[in-house]
Structure formats: structure tokens, C-alpha cells
Figure 1 (cartoon, one colour):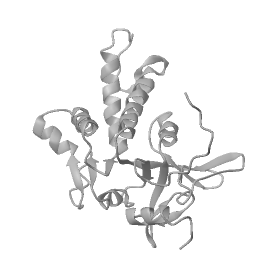
Figure 2: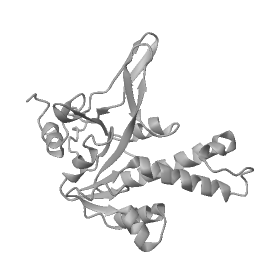
Figure 3: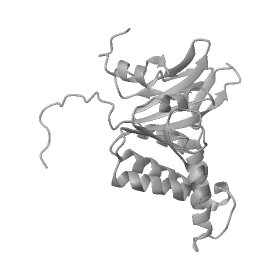
Length: 250
């Protein structure tokens, strides 16, 4: 193996990057995905019926084929692994995939002869086996999506935690256990979508600070120097424009 002897130039393209867009319901997340040219939306909720998206509705496909949702999702991903003619893939939502993964984890463990007890939920299994199985399934999905030859957008809801002393709101990914911290570590960009009187906004402005002995975390940010710390209108055009701006304001 030949080790590098010179610093390489930073690749500031967004091609092939993975985005995590989290936020409250109806805060513009799905609309953002629908704006991306040549983007396939894997729709888990039927939320793109009223949007100008190029989408595959997992629920409709499952009903038509009489297969379960996870099987249909895996068929879509398997097809994309063989040939991905899209510039981007959006999964809307990661929350639903997590629920499907929970069901699969329970099924796998209940069918495992080495598992001493059976359960209806991932929390019913001893030594955290249910959570571990669920985590492995979800992270395997993320890893497979990451390997696709295109940009990937994961859309999910955030969990609001309110500090009783300061009333500060912390927004983190609404997934069980360690997944809420593992998935953000795998992606390149984390944006929090919000809706206010100013309209739909997308924040890459993450922070962590401590007050009254308690930490408050905004789980956002970007590996792209032009996006990191920025608050933009919730649009794909705004993201591309800011990424290409050279970091100049305005």
C-alpha cells in the first residue's frame, strides 16, 4: 500500500452524500424531497400523493403484490443496487422503516432457537437482544443505502425534550436506543426543518451547551464548510446554491 505524501483538495460536491432531514410533521420535509430533479422517493406513508414527486408507494405496492412492506422495500433497494438511474433517493420516512425493522427483529428472535424467551416487542428480550437486533437491521439498511451511486436523503421526525429548569427544547432523532446517535454519525449533513411566520426553514446550525448542570443539544450540522452552521429556506435549490457559494454570505 502506497501512503499519501500530499494533501488532497476537498471535494465540495454533494453528489453521493447522505442527508438526514428531521423535523416536526408538516414542516416541509417531504416537499423538499419532491423538489429534487431525478429523485426517486420511497414513500412509506402515501404522503407524496399530493406532491409532484417521482415516488414508489410502499403501501400500494405491498397491497398489490400481497407482500409485507419490508419485503417490498428490500425489492426496491435490491433493484437500485443493480441499477440506479437516479441522481438521488429519498426515504420518507426513516421512522416507518424503524417500525418495520422492529417487527422483523421480533420475528427473527422468536424464530431463533437460541433465544430463551419470546416477545411481542424488542424490549421483551433479555440482555437487550431485541434492541441489538433492531439496531443491526436499521444500520444495515442505512449502510446499503449509503452504498448506492447517488445522493441519499433520509427523512425522519424529531423528538422534543424540554428542560424542566430552563424550558429549552432539545431536538434529536426520534428513534429508539442508540440509533438516535448512531445514524447521525453515518450521514454527511443533518438539517432540522421548521415552520414559522417566515416560512419553511432548514437549519444546519448544531450546538451543544450546558446550563444549570444540564446539556442542551441541537443535533444538526454539515461536513460541507459552506452549509455547516447555516439556516436556509427549505428548498433543494437553496442547499445547492449555498454549497456552491464559496461560503460567502448572500
